[in-house]
Length: 83
Image (cartoon, rainbow, N blue to C red):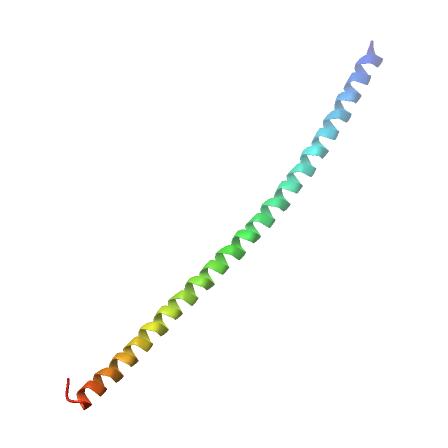
């Protein structure tokens, strides 16, 4: 009787050990996947921030250019006597 119980216990311990190893491998794989996903998200957020900065600069440059052109036109109109 003892031998059968010991064999069952040994088999249970081996199975449990295998399960724990599988769980550890799965968790490590999940952590690697999560890290890769976070890295891709950070890269996307950085790209969006850079793109937003470029758009702000473009709008600022366009506003500045519009102001310069408007000023030149105003000076020309005054010089022609229309202003």
